Length: 390
Ligand code: TGC
Ligand code: FAD
Image (cartoon, rainbow, N blue to C red; front, side):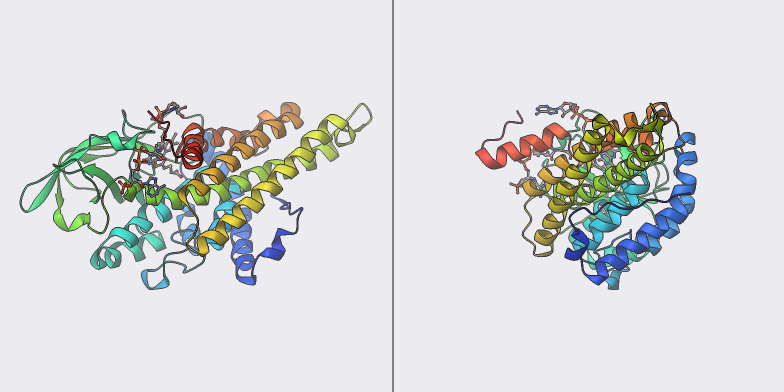
């Protein structure tokens, strides 16, 4: 049974509104009821548990901040963050599915799409009837998406799309893909590509040791005729996909706290119960150091995420501020997962506990949505004014 108790050392609940707490508690209860009992098995089998899609929609995880007129939950940025925190408390792969659907598929359609595109896709994405994926990364262009080679040509009544994307979450089962590709002038645009169109295939990536409960795949475009009305016209250039990443990275900054809280809570409970040398290991200085540092780091991360949420609600958060929180909070979580696993000794490597799964998942989280290094370089560029990428 899942008897998770969320740590809140600085009474951060007092900073939340009643709506925030209602949304958070509903997500927390749903994760306990629907995710915890099945997730270990799904991860062991390397299967995305499709049965949870409708539940994700019900707790508002698909488009939390998209207006209700398009099927979204119409919530603020802190509620969005809290939902991501609770879902990732269950599993980073499940949070990935929600992040992609909300911030990388619904957000660009809402922000850059036409009214027809919004009406056609957003309500179905919000309900989970349609699932989406986001194709930016390519085999030869990961950290440097601006170098992408996927391209489309104007053929009069349609666009002809060619190229390939790699490492795409949800690709194997997605109904639609938001794909970033260059036009004949080398300018990046977003296109909505529907499953079933000739020349479009989505082979699955197998043998992952991380994010096993999330399906990852490629997007291959071999002379795909994309209808012209599927181009999202309201923004082009690399800033368009990067704008989506801001929203997803913000959600990850909260999500990572969830994974860390789960590891801490599990390790604390275990340390108090596990007796060695005639006393609980929680009574040893070495284990107390680990646990005390964990709760300190979780508390700092919670404050950072909350403040960033306030800035986002005010429309004032910068991309560099988001990078700092994504980078800090994911590293915080992965370090806590590694320490927590050791507190459980041999039991820590089994699927009886969630820690090793979180630890392995976080290896993807620290890499996707901008690697740990790239986010450091974004901070470096922001404070010095000098880009050091090349
Ligand atoms: P640079 O010249 O700096 O910028 C190009 C244009 O973009 C603008 N911009 C942004 N706009 C909005 N939001 C941001 N965060 C932005 N950052 C930059 C910028 O102002 C400029 O606009 P304009 O109008 O002047 O053209 O671009 P660069 O090529 O030097 O690259 C900068 C860099 C390295 C920071 C960027 O390429 C980057 O962030 N790379 C990391 C790639 C990445 O994060 N990929 C993620 C793929 S999606 C994914 O991982 C999903 S996982 C999903 C899940 O399961 O949760
Ligand atoms: P590379 O860019 O090749 O980086 C390799 C190493 O070099 C890293 O350590 C990096 O930090 C370092 N490095 C790169 N550039 C520099 C530099 N200038 N200075 C110093 N060091 C540098 N992408 C999508 O578009 N959509 C998705 O849905 C999606 N889902 C994903 C799911 C999973 C499970 C994973 C693992 C990845 C996913 N990605 C997705 C791709 C992800 O965004 C990329 O893996 C990530 O951006 C890094 O690109 P790369 O793997 O090509 O690594």
